[in-house]
Amino acid sequence: MTGYKVANGNGHSNGNGSTKGANGTNGHSNGHKSADYTAQENPTYPYEVIEEIADFITKGSGMRPKIGIICGSGLGSLADIIQDPKIFEYEKIPNFPVSTVEGHAGRLVVGTLEGATVMAMQGRFHFYEGYPLAKCSMPVRVMKLCGVEYLFATNAAGGINPRFAVGDIMLMHDHVNMLGFAGNSPLQGPNDPRFGPRFPALVNSYNKDLINKAIEIGKAMGIESNIHVGVYSCLGGPNYETIAELKALRMMGVDAVGMSTVHEVITARHCDMKVFAFSLITNKCATEYSDKKDDEANHDEVMAVAKNRQKACCELVSRLIREIHMASA
Image 1 (spheres, rainbow, N blue to C red):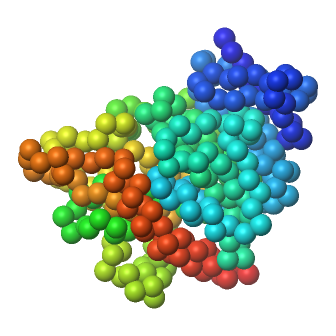
Image 2: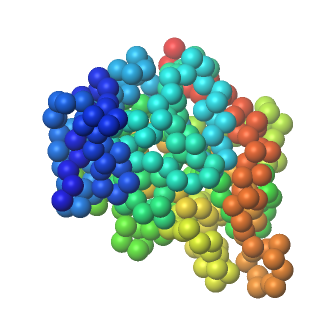
C-alpha cells in the first residue's frame, strides 16, 4: 500500500524525497515526517493532512482568505482579476490532486479582490477523472482551514429549462444530487467532528441573502433578463445526458445540469461555510429526439460561450464580493 507523506508547510522537494501518492495525488516530503495514511484503505483526507496543506498555503501566501472561489470550465478568468496574487501550481502543493480537464488551469490563486482577501481554484476535480468525491471536494476543507467563510462555486451547465438561453446565468437555490442517488457522497467514511456533524442538514444550502444581492447586482448591470434562479443537478459524466435522462431531470424540477459543484457545496455546508453558486448556461439541452448534430452538446461550445460571457461573470462576482467586504468592514 502507498502512504502519503505531508510537508510541514515550509516547502516541498522534487526529486529529493518526493513521493508519488495514489490516485494521481502528488505527495511531497521535506525530510520531516508528519502524517502518513493509506489512500486505498481510506479515500478521505484526515484532518491533520488538510491542516498541513492549509498551513502550506497560508504560510506561502502570508494571507488568511475570507472568500473562496471555484472557477468552472472556461471561467478561470475569475482568478485572473485577483490583485497581488500568490500562485500555487496544484502539482507543487503537498498531497493536492491535479486537474486534467481542458479549461482548468490547475492553479490556486491567493490575493485580494474588492478589498477582500480571497483564494480561487483555477480548475476543480471531477468524479469522472477517477477521483472519489472526498478528494474532489477536499480543497473546500483546505479553504475552511485557511480561514474561508464564504464559498463561491461556479460552473458551466446545460440548460434544461426552456426559458433559459445560452449565455444566461442561473443562481443556484437548490440541487438534485444524482451522484448521491447512486450511493456516492463526499462525506462517506469516518466523520471528523472538527469539520462538521455526521449527518448535516442541507435545507437552505444556498445563502438566500447572497442570491438576493446577486439579483440586485444583475439589475444594476443591466442583465436582469439574463439572470434566473433555479435548481442544478450533478451527474457523473464524462458522457453527456441522454434525451430520456434529461426528460426525467426536468420532471424532477431540474433547470440546469452539469458534472460538478454539488459535492463541493455539501462539503462546504458540512463545515458551516456560506455558499453562493451559479451556473453559466453554455448550451441548451435537447429534450426531444432529433437526428440533427446541432442538438448534441460538446466541450468546445462550452468553452466558447464561457469565454464570451467571462466579463459579465467576473463583474457579478466582484460586485458581490465588494458587498460582503463592505458589510464586514
